[in-house]
Every structure is written in structure tokens, then in C-alpha cells.
Image (cartoon, rainbow, N blue to C red):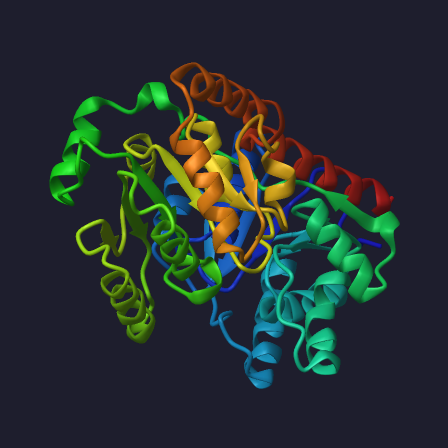
Length: 385
């Protein structure tokens, strides 16, 4: 399969850009792990705010206009990637997103390199015939990584992919960063003062860009049903230009008589501290999360997590043991579960917290994800022999 005679993997990860997201963070984590193992590796993308981390890791980054769906540019990128592969003796090309995956696929096949994909989401399926064709590149890997059982099932149901080439590798939590013992009181006080958050009310936190499917409006509707209880709800996330949705949320809060009980924070750099000052972390997604990293990170911090009973949350949260599920899209169900969480006794809260931290450390750490990914790289090297 691969003409390169290197005994060790020489890996090129390909993605659209290095902004702030799960795909980008996973790329950085794998690059760092490969460096620690002494494995030569590269990243190609359009660049972005996380590019400096690659420089810190001494991982070479190739800047290409990979955040494009223009067919001509995709073909141009393929030629550039082919040249990079040949000049750097790369024998594994790991694609993490659809448009750059087409470029990476053509380049890898022409160069005789192994082609690996990570299926990070369900992607859109409308119009079905067109989207299935476009998305299908993510199943063209010699091996295909699915980031959850939910995604694995989606691939099998929609793409007719050979199950034998699917490898389940969960996304991860950096338990060194998301460790409650490392968050100082000073960090928490700084956040509370900066954003004028109360210290005498339970804080309910939802982190996620302001978009309808993330469920901010659902959470507002749910909290109206228990507004006789004390709470302050914090939305952390950028509306990315959807000001109409931000306005809708604020109007809903006002119309329900809950002014002053919500805070909107566009962006925050100290997420662990924000979680530590929170009593409940909510994932109210209306559509299934592919994995649900925020919920898992909150579990690692020992927070009480309330999440929709769909998608990756069914795998990362053990209902009633490490957190709670509610019926997706149902404000009554969400209100009932939040009320239950707010009324937990200290001993019950402590028990759930301990179980949540242990669950994450045993199943969803960065070390586990990196080790399993490296095993896939080794498997590809064996397949080429």
C-alpha cells in the first residue's frame, strides 16, 4: 500500500485551520504525543490562533488555503500536499475534515502514502445525495477513526463503510488542566469579580457558541419553570454574528421575568475556573453531540453535569452515577433534572463528583486517546508491509 520504506510512521495531519475547537485541539494533542515518542510529524492547515502551539512543540506547520470548498482550490491543495508528502518522506496522511480530506486523499494515493481519517461529527446530510457524496471522503481512509459509538453507528447506517476498518477512539479530556485541585481560589475570585457573578446563589453554566441547536433557549424555558429557586445562569459562547439569536435569548429572559439572573460571556480563557465556580454544568444540545467534550471536562472537574439523552453524552455520562440525563428538547424534563441536581445533599453531590472524576480518568484521558491513535498509525505501517 505504501511505497515509503520508513520503518516508523512519518505523519502529516491535515485540517482546515488551527482555531479554537475540538478538531484543532485533538490535532495539537496528537502532534505533541508524537514528538514525545520521537516520531517525525507535520501539520497542514490555513493557520490560526493555535499555530503557535505547534511552534512550541517544534512541529513544522505548512500553511495552505485548506479552509475552502472551491473545487479548483481543493485540487491545487492536493498538488501542494503531494509535494509536501514526497519531500518529507511522509508515509501516513491523517485527514480530519471533509474539504481538506479530498485534497489529502488524492495527494496520499498519488504519493503511495497511507490515508487515515477521523470522523469528528455527523456532518450535514441535506441534500442527501450531494452531502453523502461530499462527506464520503471521510470513509475513504485505509482505516477510519470514529470518536464515539454514536459516530460509529452513524457511519455504518449512512455510508455503508466496512466495519472492519473502523476504529473507535474517544476524544479526550486533558486531566492535567481539568483538575479541581489545581484551580486556586484567586482564579475563581478573579472571574467572579470580572463578570459580576454572585457568590450567594448556585451557578448554572452552559458553555457553547450561541446557536439554537446548543439549547440556550431550551435552558431559559426550563429555568422559568423553577424560577422560584435561587440560581444564576451563565452562558459562555460567541454568537459568531448571530446577533438576532442573542437578542432573542435576552428578550425571552425579560418576557419571563428573569432579568438579572443571567450573564452572557462571549469568551473565556480560564474554563476550569469557570467550571469550579459553577454548581451545575448543562449540555442542552437539541442535536446529538458527537462526543461532548464540555460535559466530559466538567465531569473531570467533579461538577454536577446535566446533559441531553442523545449522542456522545450517553457514553460519557452514567445517568444518576456520574451525572444526569434529561429528555432531549424537553424543557419540563430539563427543569425537573436541574431541580433534582440543585437539591442534592452534600454527601450525594460528593459521591457523584468522585464517580465522575474516576470515570473520566479511566476512560477519556489524553493519554488513552494518544496511545490508541498511535496504535492505529502502527497498524497502518503493518498493513503496508
